[in-house]
Every structure is written in structure tokens, then in C-alpha cells.
Length: 469
Image 1 (cartoon, rainbow, N blue to C red):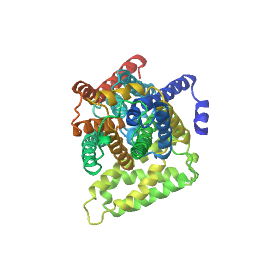
Image 2: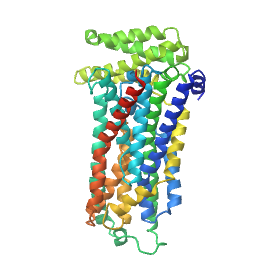
Image 3: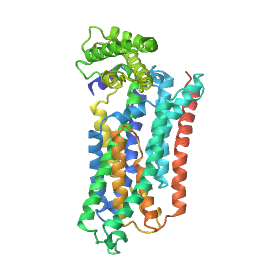
Image 4: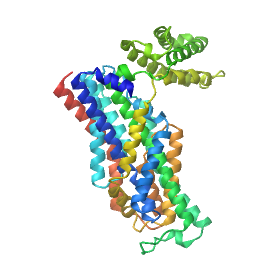
């Protein structure tokens, strides 16, 4: 927070206002994400009468808060790296400002509009679509064609995880319900709750449902909270690169980064140096820039973004090195990954105040505005009321799927995993699904990515035309 306050103190007043608006929208996106996506986590405990609505949403909000604090930052930089960060190199340029504001406004607008009509769409899709849209629009204006401004390799990895996760949710929840029918033949578990509003499920089912609600909320906080961190880091790197291009918190960061660069250079020189010319050249530049420095704070302000860009470019080049040597007898990937991780540590970090801010926003958002999505998921997907076993199966699958995605550093959609899990249990239970609702949800899922891309690109092109270069 000290770096942020110091940087803001020296900003032009107009840029300060833009920064404040951008951060307000970014944190607002996380509040909306809270009540838009986390409604899925509380649906089953509310509709199986395991918990009353108010305790359920406060419990889920607290678990979301903890999930953000405990979740790490790998997914945050999966989001950041969808764009070549070099696009934001001219931090105070009008183009960079327009880009950041366009993707924020597009993401928030689509999320709010789909929440208003009660459609459980993916905030992950929305955010990623907005980033891709501004990247393509910027590339088009720069003369590189519409496809030059996006890291399509990373976009493909993210897109695949978002595409596969709802299929996993549907199939796994259906299979789990079928297994439960055979192994736990208690008819009470497979019938809708009794009409008595005071009726509660068996104690052990209540424990499972409360536990999985907490688990889904923790996993959601970890996964989606990191997306919010990535969004805010785009804002900070775009508008305050001198303060946020490098990790200034590490007292020995420059020394460790230089030593990692020296080790990498030795490794690359020993293995086909003629194929690694650009990487070795960048390593030499990095070693020179950090020579004699202990802390990254000692790096002159005007050199910080250059060092960030060098490390970022090196990391991309090392992808090629590891891929090219993957099948060789002397596979250096394991030795390269250690110093490579140390290099990343100099630029891939999230300040504590950002983590806590995102945690608070996601937790608060969970406690408000949840009803629209809850009603859709619980009442409008299936033709009958959600049973205890269906709720437990959908929640267990969602918790496991999102948790595994966290371990792999991949962003997935809580909304899609849990909604498809509920649909899978309805299909497995032969209770039927409501075709109109499922069609609307599928249509919204299909439209979210292109709609947010077009909205963000349109906003960026409009703002570019208005404010110029």
C-alpha cells in the first residue's frame, strides 16, 4: 500500500481520477462476481433446507473471503498473460487508459445484465472475453491485424478449461448420483423435501451439504478471486508501471533475480547456444541492469518496465526451450524451471492490499443479490424440486472440479460447473429438465465470450476515436 500511495501522490490529477474510477470498477466487478457466481454455492443448502438463506450466504461469504486469502496467484497471471503486457508499456498513454477502462466496463456491464435477468453465466468467460476484445482491437489499430494482440496459446489453455469443466460437472454429478443410489439406498435422499418448511435433511446429509457449500465457496474464492487480482494488476501495471512493474517488496529481489539469470545463461550456453541467441542476449541485458543491486527498489524508475518486459519476454522464450527439449535424452526442463520461477517472482506478485480488497469485495458480494440466480438454478433447471442427494452430488463435483483447477492454475467457471452438475443430477434422476431454461442458459453461455469481446472491443475503438492517440 505504501508504494501505491507514493505513486498516486506524484500522479497527474486527471490520471488519478482515471485510476480511482478503474479501481472502483475493478473491485465492483468482484462484488458483482460474488452475488452472481457464488449464488450457485448456496443454492443447494437453501433449497434442501439445510441452512436458512441468511446464515447460508454469510457462511459462503466468509468462505469466499478465506479462499481469496489462501488461494495464491497462479490464476491471476493466467489472466494477465492473455494479453502481451507490452501493450500497456506506455502506462500513461491514452491508449492504455482506454484499454483498461474498456475491458472493465464491458465485463461489469455483461455481468450485471445477465444477473438482472437471472441467467447464471460465467464471470470467467466475461472477464476473459473482455481482455481478448481489447487486445484484438488494439492490435487492429496498431496495424498487426486483429489476432496479433493476444497470447493465443494461453487463451487456448484457458478456453479449453472453461469448455471442458461444465461437461465434467454434468457427467460427474450424474455418475455420482447413480453411485449414491446403489450404495446408499435411503429413499428419503432421492425425494423432494417434504412440504413442511421446518423439515430438515438427515444430520449427516446436512453435514455433507454444509461442508460442500463451504468447499465450493473456498474454491470459488480462490479461483475467481485470483481473476480479480489479475484484473487489478492490469490496472496497476497499466497506470503505475514504475511502482508495480517489479516486486519491490523483496529486500534481496535484485540479487536473487540476477543469480537466477546467470544460472539460466550457463544452462542455455551449454545446450545449443546458437538456438538460444535472443534468450541469452536478454539474460545478458538483465544481468547488466541488475549488477551491483541488492533490492529491486534500487533499479532506476525509468528502467523498471524495461526489466519487466525482458523477464516477460524471456519467460515466453523459455516455453520454446522446454518444448524443444522435451523429448531429448538430457531434458533440462527440471533444471530450467527453478531459476525460471525465481525470475517470474520479480514480476508476478500481488500486493497484500489487493488480495485483502478482493477478498472483502467477493465476500460482501456473496451476501447480497444472490436470489435471482438461486431461483434459476434451483427451480428452473429441473422439473422437480432439488433432492438432498442431487444437491450433495452437484456440490461435491463442483468443489472437486474447481479445487483441481486451482492446483493446475487454470480458471474455471463455478457457475457452469455447478449449474451443469444440477442438470446432470436431474437427468440421472429422470426428473427431467426445463427445456426453455436450459436453452436460455446455454445460449447465454455461448454468447458470453463473443458478446463481451465485441462490447470491450467496441468500447475501446470508440474511446480511441474520441480521445485519439
